[in-house]
Picture 1 (cartoon, rainbow, N blue to C red):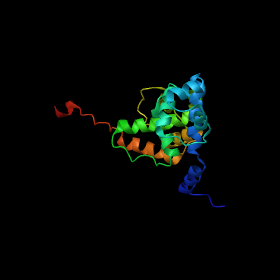
Picture 2: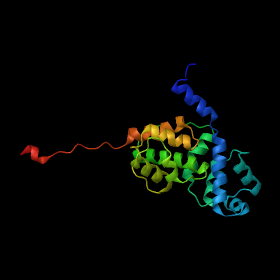
Picture 3: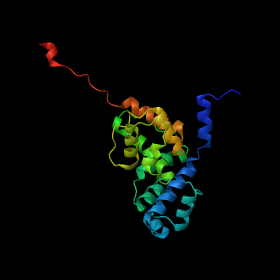
Picture 4: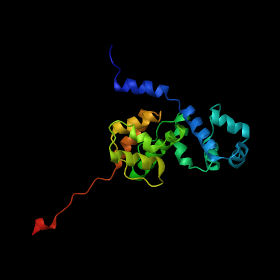
Length: 199
């Protein structure tokens, strides 16, 4: 039996990845973790309670404004839902960023959205189960998923990033675009010049 090529495997994996379902699961988790009644969240978000329920079950594809206000009403950062919403809306990953900080923000946001969709599993346990992850990889992943400020993430290898994406049931094809852009825009270390060499 001939094994599928990497491109064919990614195509199958992407076909199985349901972005609409992932978005609904993320919104449902935000609601459950908010400790607010759905009526209060719906009121703050400017939507009806029945519409809020449909968002959380994936029966309706919401506008970005509905996702943004729902997320804010739950006390969370809407940026973490941007990539999930784009994917659920059938939009490709954005064109490659030319700025490192933007690339880092996009990479972080995409991973945090997947983390939300999986009900925010404990990052320490998550990283301990990633094959080949070093202590530095674990620190970077945990910071990406939990902290407001992110340590340089371009040190993450693709195998570790792919394993993390698989653990979070995300699209490796989509995340690989963010990962590659992050690597391409990362600052290059400047060569050290030793003044003693000039006498």
